Length: 448
Image 1 (cartoon, one colour):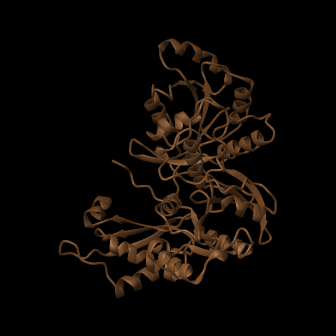
Image 2 (cartoon, rainbow, N blue to C red):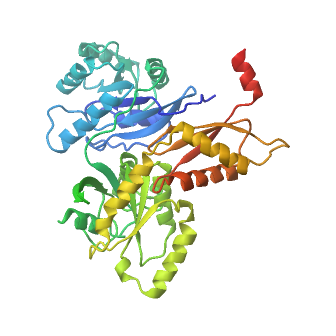
Image 3 (cartoon, helix red, strand yellow):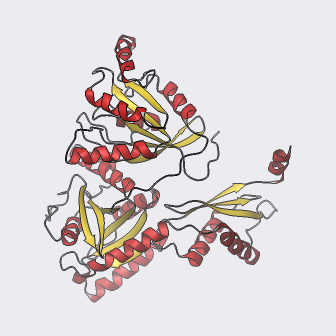
């Protein structure tokens, strides 16, 4: 049975030098293929977080780029990402390739981690059978305690490793620090809506290749741009395909990296083309941002190309097809002429402010009590549930937990969400309202 967990989840950081199988281990922990795996060092370039579940315990597993203390350029950037994961995690898993043995980089990582106050589990990966276990003994030299032999690829001893991870977790997760530096913005949309043109306009130089052929951008491209007197880190991504599993080769990895860019961002700008009908692909891109819990700005590009008929048609499409994200901030722009682009910073700030907004508990409950008195929840099974208490469990995005004596219908939960938005705004961010049922039997059990 899954235990209830409010607030932030414990964080497990998977760290190690390039190509030791970190992403494969992440996929094994998750029980699904989520992290990009390729037999080439450097495929993972950023910290990417996923929610995992083991023995009823939920936690966040963080995949990181390869750790290399001597790296320069992109390698140094990867190292900073991994080091940040080490500083903010509740449990650290250091992955070493048992077939290669302890390298100088592994030794350097171990020296850093020995000074850490976090619990560290040493994993000897690629121990695929009993014959391979002889290689594990050498890894005692890292001074990290007993190496845990695992085959991330085949799943050998992965359950034992997960038990160790749960045992090492603190009772409460650490207070998470937010990384300093430019806010991270993922620029996403289906192919050929003008993402690279917008990046070039923002950067005031040719950062990304622009071509009328869809699919020119494959890897996410980071650009530090100054907008509205502030620096932002924009990531131009490949156009998302209809379904990841229908793509192959470079397209497949481009799609996965785009999903990873959304996960790594704080706010996403979804770019739509004003001269084209809002499509199923556009809707899927928006859904990915919402499901990832990221702040959302919808930018409609090529606005300068509209005639009056298309303008009226587009407004009807927006009213019909984007009704579920009416809360998203919206801006009309032209990447080619620069129209409206300067106002994008304000929309990003508004969305991020809502994404990080916390409502005081007393103020929240006073509002909800008055709301419920005016519009009580509908009866179910002849009995009307009573809302006892509401708390905001988390931010980034805001998450609210309603403690009730009975189940609240989905329609009433949507009503609560709408009223919370009307009262406190939350423009540009998804919010989540969940319900915990506590009836008289629960109270009696707690008293006994």
